[in-house]
Length: 473
Image 1 (cartoon, helix red, strand yellow):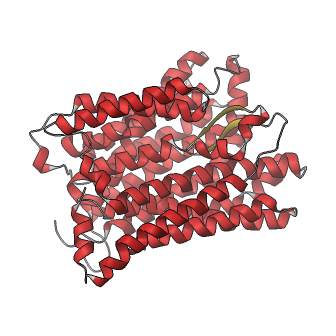
Image 2 (tube, helix red, strand yellow):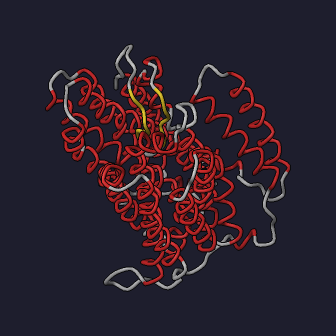
Image 3 (cartoon, one colour):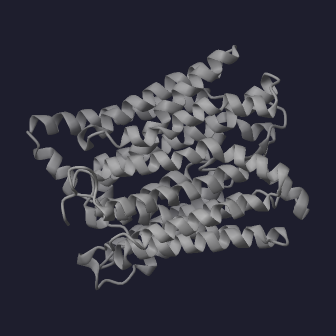
């Protein structure tokens, strides 16, 4: 690969960066813009309260469960090819969603859209990682994620305006040109794949067991009392491990889970993502139902935390790989303190200020989960690693809502990785940010312990440990 010129990255890096940025923006915009439109969807398609949440849950189950397989497919058959395929599938499915004549059709189209989303993120991350010169990928990824974070800011407003002034169908039409732009940009980037596995077929047994285990896990996290889902996740997880140990070319190399920095950043990123979901749910609800604000006022107040989340990607991209775990620990600690303050705040100004501070820390932590993990694994298996990371972040996102106590209040709906999805409080104990704060503080303590074990000895070893960490996984 040629070294980029002094005045900026080479065209191939720019095209890969553009493809990831627009693709991630498209996925985020679809998630955030759809949230305020769900009540209108239910009224227009005459859907039942039990069926409407599947507009979101169907998408999330497909996206979260298929990401490990999607990431490995990108490594085997080409990251550019899989990103292009994912963007085309996402755009076509969005058009089908916009044309849906009935709720079951809409749910089916959303599942297909989830398959497209599962391909976009792992393939896009791996494409940019391999297009960038060694040591430069995390900054390029951070900038791309920063642009995608803009959807966090504008998505809810666009969705609300379109749903009220035009139609909820316009929310889906809005993502079609962005999906087309993603495919157009990806086709201009250089193709890359794992050359060492060119002759290896896809690990079908691993793909089926991993997907099934993740579906069961996601369903259990949505309904913690349903222990049948937990048993299914455990059994399929055990079958997955057995299949990977026997496979000549496994879907996920189990050595990845011996890469302590990777595992720590992924687990801490899941904690941060769950806390972000909690914040996105509690803050607007508290302002509207607890403080008597209108929807417009709450939306304006939410701009500051949303913008703070969006800047996390570029900041995370500037963190050195060796400092990723300590910085992650600091971010979770700061987020935990800010969420605690927001949870006990009695004044509106303190609530918004604390939420904004928490959003800054959570935005950086979420960005580190993607940029940091890519920098501590081998480049040729970047798709596999990003697929596992994104899957963990997506599947565990609903924990954030459970920690707020919203389930006890009789809320309806579902929460996605993008945030609040059509939930309304139904009385009972009001949702709180105290437990998400405790989760962040616990995650910070564990990440700090790992930092002491890995980073400090690595410095004493004059780079010996750093090279060893890079080689695993």
